[in-house]
Length: 275
Image (cartoon, rainbow, N blue to C red; front, side):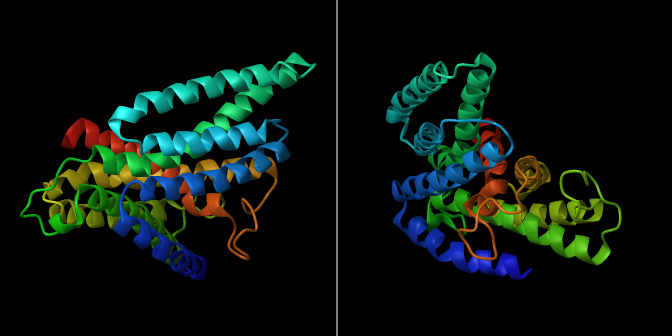
């Protein structure tokens, strides 16, 4: 719980600042986080025996994150840059004398970039979100800020709810080969907590709160999947934390792992159901 409190103290002030500033500062902030997280990912991949071109991968991850928050008129151009980046990763891998090493280098470089670059969907959610009803309780925030806050609260509430319920009542564990502390009771508690918060936020944004019956579990379960994915990555790389950037509390990837999966899932829901 102390780790969660410290994380909140570290991340809430910058989050509030970029939310107040709005776009493009939100996208820029996510791009910086993606660059830092990508550096950690490629270090872990190296520890897992997967060679990569880390500098190119970091550049691709940052571009991907910035592209996700780009206005519609720029998105196609940014996507073209990503495609060129994939080509450059392949060309760079040609220099490896062992084709098997070259293939691993290409795959690991592109994987790391796309994995971390998914953080940009936090900004994309704000870009694609529909306008709020002027009579909605949080209408003054605007669609971009409102929907990003919904995502952040959904993920943080799941994490806190799962921890508290799991610590108090958790008995049956799952996927212990990836994360030995996860329990079914914590999973259910986190999903319920996240769904309640999503319902309140949907109402505050002028949407039907019953949508939380679907969106709440989607956000919660994708956040949990993101956490497990990073745990699998770290176990493969033989590390406890993604880095020691935050002394005693890990690195940037440890703090944003849930959003790498939850952000695109929530964005897809908004595009497919809300708009």
